[in-house]
Every structure is written in structure tokens, then in C-alpha cells.
Figure 1 (spheres, rainbow, N blue to C red):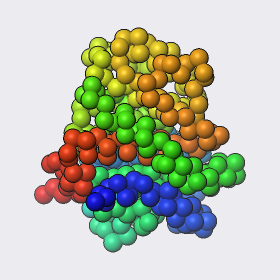
Figure 2: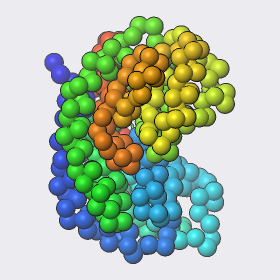
Figure 3: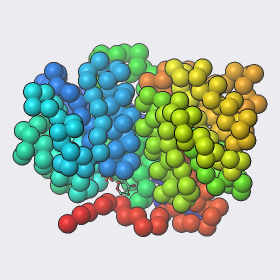
Figure 4: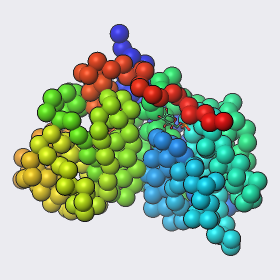
Length: 350
Ligand code: F1P
């Protein structure tokens, strides 16, 4: 029987279609608030997948709009607020949570409002949640809501919302046109690369995964690391690609699969690293727009998206491949992807 998780991964392009439809009103409430707080720093906040989503969201928001943005884990907002907020700064807090019920994210929103007088905009899949109820403004991605414990389509759909919002605010028509093409590309990525994801995931020699990406792709690499841990209980790590040489590379061996979430901006540097890790004996998977013919032999597994989309637009296309890897590795290890060990849909604290 198909798991709920598998269905949600494979149908996520439909949620992207729904998000694109919703964006036609310019995400009115969210967009208006962003204009109102134009001179503020935009602080994206979340836990787990929603924190990693915040990392990519902040990076892409700043790149596209030119407005200052950063991402922080919700816990740092109330435990180490001085490391984030300064007395004279203007801020807008953007807590992200699929459930809207994660305690730390609610505590962060409350701290912003009650202790720091910072306005908040919630991004969630759940309109009837404590977080949405508490925040000053909201943006709901209802069609991205999930039944499964691990977050898959909610991650990509909420990231797409931030990409669209960034394009709308900056009146970037080219980017908007590119984003409109994502559901079609997403559908074919899921169909065309399922076997590669399955083969890479089921490689019996692999017991250690390393995910590498730069800029907004680092948030994706972090989420990929989490997916492999949550779904398939496999030891996984994530780094900025060029950071990998600075120590972490020491644990690489022939049982390591190094996965490159390669962007066009960092491709030249990442290809050098690809060759190095291959030479050291690791297995490699490259997900990229396309790889020069001379470099293809360095990739044991190769996913060429060939979307003709820019780095800023292409982001979410990488994730179905990773999510399918998590799924097939779980099934291969006879782990039920709908029932991950020690995890619940929401982390609620006293
Ligand atoms: C965040 C989260 C998930 C994680 C787990 C517990 O949830 O940390 O990323 O997979 O299921 O919750 P949310 O705040 O986005 O609802």
C-alpha cells in the first residue's frame, strides 16, 4: 500500500499549482505588511524543517528584494535575543510553522510581541492554530497541509510562497514567469528521476550521507540532511559546499555518498570539490541544471534538471529527488515512512 508520505511527495506539484493560484492576489495581507515595514530587517523564524526553510527563504528574499533578511531558530529568539535584535533596529518577525502549534515558535512570536514590541507575520499551513491566531498578520498555505509526520510538500510549497512574495514585492516579472513553470518541471522531475533516487538510496555500501550547497542551497542541503535522518535513520550531515574541505572531509570514506545540490553560481567551485571527493573514494550524486560532459564521470548518480530556470527560481526542484531518496531508503530498511522513530508531527513543550 502506498504510504501517505509517498503520496504527498509525488503529488507536491499540485500544491505548487495551488500556491501559484493563490499568489494572483499578490498575497495581499503579507505583501501590504512587507511594504509597511520596508525599512525593517526581515527575520525568518522556525524549528526543524521550518528553520531550514527559513535559511533558504531569508537568502532568497534578500537576494531578490534587496531587503535585509536573516534566519534564526525559534529557540534563539527567546534564549539569546540580544544576538539577533539590537536596541535601535527595526524588525519584522516571520515565524514559519506547518502546524502553527510548535511551542518554541509560539514562544518566539510571543517574546517578539510582548518583550520587544516587534510585529509578526505568520506563515503556516494551519489557519486555526495558536501561532496564526497570535501573530499580527498571516499567510496560509492550506493546500500544502500534510497528514504525514515528516514535512515534504509543505517545505517546498512554503518556500515557493517566499519566492513568489519576493518576486511580487520587487516587481520581478521574469522571476514570476519562471516560478509559474515550476509545477510542470516538478511533475517531470518526480517521474524522470525516481529510479535514480531509488538506486542511490538503496546502495548497500552507503551508510553516511553528506549534503552540500551554497547560498540559498545551504538551507536545502540542511533539509535534505534532516529528511534522510527522519525518514531512513541514516547518519547524514550538511555543509556549505566549500566548508566541507575545512575538517568534515576527514570522515569521508568509500561508504560515504556526497550529494551536491549544485547551483549555477557555485558550479565551478563545486565541480573542483566533486572531483576531489571522487578521488578520495566517496560515492557522488550531483543534482544540477546540467553538468559539462567532461565532468559527468565524476558523478556516480546524476540528476540534470535541464529546466532553463535561474538559481533563484529552480530551488524547489531539487527536493523531490531528496525526499524520494529518504522514502526509498526507509522502505529498503523496512522502516514505515509514515511512522518515524521518536518523532511526532508537532513538538509541544510544557
Ligand atoms: C516543525 C517540526 C518538523 C519536524 C517534526 C516536528 O514543525 O520540527 O520539522 O519534522 O515533525 O516539527 P512546524 O513548526 O513546521 O509545524
